Length: 105
Image (cartoon, rainbow, N blue to C red; front, side):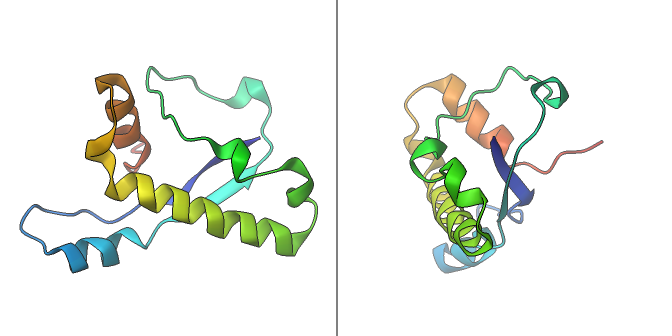
């Protein structure tokens, strides 16, 4: 079971106001799905988000409950995105900044 971002937040330069930053960060679109473990590409980055509290396997069976889980995930991701500087270790900070970047292939 994995959770991630289907659509990343937009870029935010330093000169933007707080209201504009919050507006640009609401663009996130989370996804939840089952993936074979062999299809996941391991990286050196670690993100310390406790997704198990938000998502339960039983919630993914019903469509309405899955939508509510996605909304809760969006709140969790937005909170972490807006409070990235409060992360304790450098490794976790690097992981959270990597998580919110758009992947370039």
